[in-house]
Length: 481
Image (cartoon, rainbow, N blue to C red; front, side, top):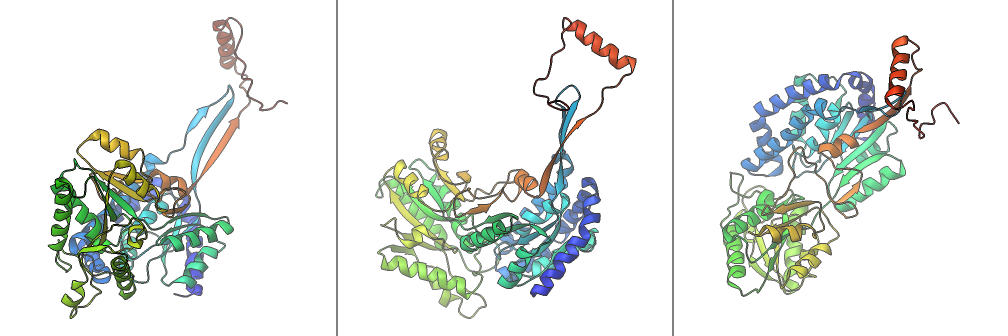
């Protein structure tokens, strides 16, 4: 797509907005319910497209679709969730509020979850009454083409949802367009900051979710079998290409301790048993040559810094040399130095950095020092231990014995304010999204007091019940100085 295409998409969304926003929330939700059913019946086809263009295994691709459709399901409940409030705040004064849609929303999404991440924005923005221009990653365009077909089949009017492709030129044209009212973005932290800053200069609402460096902390009392399985799934699943993936495992206690050695050995063994491929239980390729080059650079840098490669996924490069895709297997690196680059920077691949710490405080110090603030998890069998860490880790989505602590609806998704994981306003799903995609309009009303006998008699009765003295609202300045 070109800038001209971007402009045409925004104009089409703007033209569709008056009629779409004038429909009732229930009417819009009814169409979304039809779309929800179509997604379920076409889930395997959507998943096959995800496997084809992204490289996930089939189980992960089906989960991508199911998780995105869960947000669609949440959006279908918005008629019950976004009602305004009304209250009589004084004798003749009533206050109420309502939620009005913003207008044209732009959604810019990454490659790693071709269905789920676009649906963090699309269903809630639509049911709240907005129209959308969606810009999927140029690396995975196919899935969203199918989604547009399903939206049309569900009965969404022309222009309500619009699709453009492209890179920087198209993104900047969309953000800068005078008819665009808000922007959502999910991607790397540097680009998230650029998008947020650009929107701020234009006084546009924006939520921009960036990268992550998620820490898992394993205490000596953790369940070794369950913890090791969860750690491997967290860091190696989806080829490590997700912002909620584990990337650092901090093992608390004596590094020569029985429990500590057993955990690290189990993690390494289970990761070594994973096979390459797109069938269930296997790990697919990373998205492109550039991503592979970046991952290799971090592994090589770790070796130079003195780290030990306990499991080397680079063997997959020769093993899969005659197949399509960019392959790198699960890798486990044992670091002696907490300042190693792979310990601190986002790798975005199936690489786990392991570091032994002597105390709880040392684990917290390492986690808190990260500039990111997406997720963190604690592994323990003691509730008191978990509570201590949950109060001290510096991230917004926390797990107890859960290595991918993605909040499920109705809870909202988003990184921590003030970190490189989140720029802009609100969370991108849940009640944060309702707030983001609407303006809260407040109305204060006063009507003349009726002069009918029933009303006058009511006032007289109230005066008698209060000893002849009706309470005066001294905060009510309506009609007086």
